[in-house]
Image 1 (cartoon, rainbow, N blue to C red):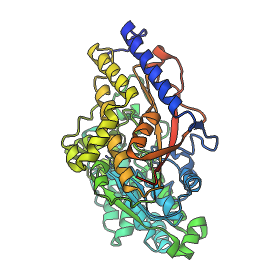
Image 2: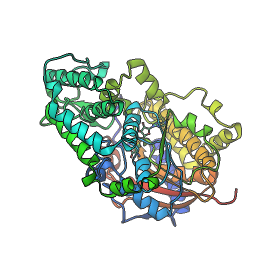
Image 3: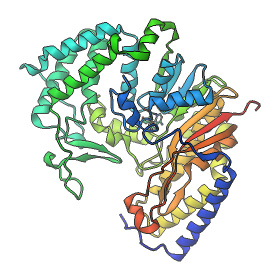
Length: 483
Ligand SMILES: C[S@@+](CC[C@H](N)C(=O)[O-])C[C@H]1O[C@@H](n2cnc3c(N)ncnc32)[C@H](O)[C@@H]1O
């Protein structure tokens, strides 16, 4: 790794100035639609606001947006007919909020731990809620896992070994063994899911951006500074609290708007999850079919879901080789992602060519890529994989956008949450570049809602460029009516 120079060289400064001018030009083009939206705030556009939402709160999925945001989007875009699509479904916030509004929804998700959340919530929705709540509470109260008996060994990956205090891992193993003995498949799966939801608080780890951060008590001397995550919950207290939370959300007396759905079951929408990569699945979906799309793709920010969710993936039995494959199949957003081989074979030739043209003709993007390639050659880049990641991120997102345009009905909205990023001092206006692709794919860019307060630079970039704010936005595009 090479340190970033405090001063950019003269040619780098020139390249940065050219990028800034082109960025300004693109911003001028969208100026009448790019505006701060004071209805929104960071908590609404992140998982934060889900903490008080029954069911959405079960699994702390930090990369998610909130159910409240989805309700706002449905209202603002007038999206009131089925089906809706989320090609990066995550924990399923868009799907389940649409369902609560009586809409059918289709989600695509690649990561096993995210797909598990959706599948479990879907299975729960189809079960007898009161009975399930009672069975969960009874299992909790029996505490069978506290008695001596067999354990299911936790199937650790190399990067998860030693993640739990010894006694915690034994209790977890006992619990998993006991859940395997439960005959009712839905109950058994929900019990196992409850354990999945508490892996972080009972471990020495914390999900922290690109990697799992390890508490010093683990004995894994990772990181330069010793990290102390504070009190680590025991397995017994964590699992009891989680089972209580799920049971209470299922209990009809407390179900609020979900109770209304139970009273009128014909009003609740259906959810279908397609497991796999949206780069392969989107081209197989019917054309002009979906009434709307609400999504949040991975950001172009080096965030590695397969490392952050390593504990959950391990528990689900995803092995080392499968993890490597998963990392490579995900939308390119880490410096390790290589070019995806044979991607074109999934797409209609003309659409693939059109998406590629949109990428290659994007002026700001070309300048940014040229600059980053130069930084890599000069060895002044923070990581040599950054230019490839940025290049592939936009190439893959262009394909997603072109395929989404095909799959949506004319007049249907597409709403996307995403962050801009900065590399080597170059601001990457993800919002404007993707909106440019969207126009070429047949969308009208209705609005780019900017969140009231952007985030500052990462500390690595501060020395070079001061604290300029980077936009976090919600894009609202609409498929043109006549194509
Ligand atoms: C920002 S999260 C979505 C969060 C979601 N909006 C929610 O509220 O839970 C992005 C998701 O995209 C998934 N993903 C990444 N690459 C993918 C791909 N090629 N196909 C499908 N899903 C992918 C990740 O696993 C992650 O769950």
